[in-house]
Image 1 (cartoon, one colour):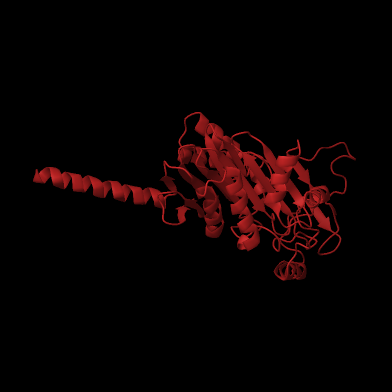
Image 2: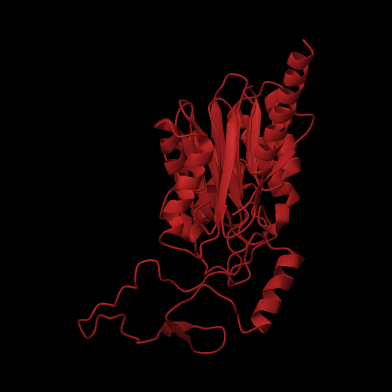
Length: 359
């Protein structure tokens, strides 16, 4: 009997140790509803979503609550108004909302003058047959449907950042193969022909060989909030909100409002959220890939790693991450180029817990 007792104690100790190691590696399991998962340590946003879903609100409602909280808090200066100025010093917003039960999607992109990105995305989903509205027309629609505006989305902090960038000759920036007429443009193609006048097309770059983007992309200028919620009924929703890349070319839209890239959800399978270099990520639709891999039986950790590997094979300097959650509440993350953290709240937690994923 004594040896049996010692064996039981040893098994409990080993199981506890194994669970701690898994948590450090960015993998966990809830097995209970509801659950909230979000990119980055946006703890207050997760608390807001949890408060809603724990009271019985739908997954869609909870996602809107969580992302709205992040917009109001201006999480890391990359969500909501007052951050990430473009080349003209203006802040614009991208947002997405997806209902994994109905597969309905609403999104806004390059939206000006309206500070509530995720609520505008919800209006698109609720009151139109469209998936996305963009630019000034998205703003006009959101205001016509009751959101406050027009509002200046810049802040003293964003304008100060933009001023310093201008003083640094507008470097770094997202231009390539161009010559500025002065330090900050206007710009023209280097050959001024676009490869057309002489009948010669531009030569493609070798696969996987690209100019480094590490000076343009980092955890404090590309940290979109991408949130997934499973409600008490087992329904899943995802949402994203971001003010995009700092010093982007005006009119640029990243992966934030692109369904399947920044986020994706399907009640039958699970969900995914992404963050990072959106210009690269949207070419691979990593969250759609994650969900479809899980549909084929791949566990969340492997599905997340597989989605990252598909990108890094072509873009080895890429920086980004995904977090996956299956319909049973098992969650995991994968990243490349940086250390990634994501936040979780479930019934078996006293508060939000942050998981760390190493590249």
